[in-house]
Each structure stands twice: as C-alpha cells, then as structure tokens.
Image (tube, rainbow, N blue to C red; front, side, top):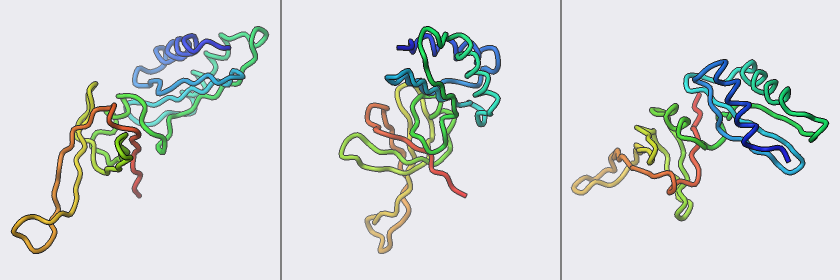
Length: 158
C-alpha cells in the first residue's frame, strides 16, 4: 500500500515550490492504492494548474512497477465539509451551516472568529422578547469547540 506520509511529503514539496497560500485539506489512500488529495487556498480558489503541479510531483516520484495506483488531486470544493483550521479562518465573515455532535442539532450563522481551540458562530433568530408583543431578531454569539461539531459547510448564496 502506498504510504500516506510520502504522499503528504511530495505534495507539500510542490506546494512549497509554487505557492505558500496553497494547503492540503485531506489525503486519503484507499485499499487498492486509490490516492485522493484535496487542496485549498487561503486567498481564493485552487486552479487546475495547482492540481496538475501537485499531481505530477506525486506521480513522478512513485514507481508504478513497484505498486500500481490511481491518483486524483482536486480542490476541496465549496459543498464539502470543513476539515482543517485554515478553512475556518478563510471563511471568517461568511455564512455556514453547523451540525452539532449532540442530537444532530443544526445551527446557521456567520463565523465571527476562529482559532486552534474552536470558532465563534453568530446566529440571528426571531424570538419572543419579554415585554414585547411581536417576535424580534435576536443576535447571539455561540462559541463552539471543534469536538462539539460534526460538520461545518459553507452556505452558497447567489
């Protein structure tokens, strides 16, 4: 089986040569040596040239005669869940949907800040306020640690 650490090393080697704002989101090596590498960029989107460069560096440094493999290098994708801190940092100020581990409760809001420990989600909800007849918009900042979160996805609006 192809070594995941070697794949990471080869990908990081090419990323260091090309662009420091590019980073690895995930590397999966399935049985049958199907290698999947997901990339993202801190300041924008991943280009096809980025994927090609990383793919070529990995492919040229692995020997198909020793172990056959298939390789796919792609961008993380806007509809996929966040996997690393840099994705939270990149999306500060953007609206996300968060599924919590406990009871699968879903929250929707804007990421206000993020760090190694967790992130702050600003939610906006209509609630009945004491002494008022009508429901009013209530803004709440909810600190969340990453182990409380099952999944976080970007909400795409047009």
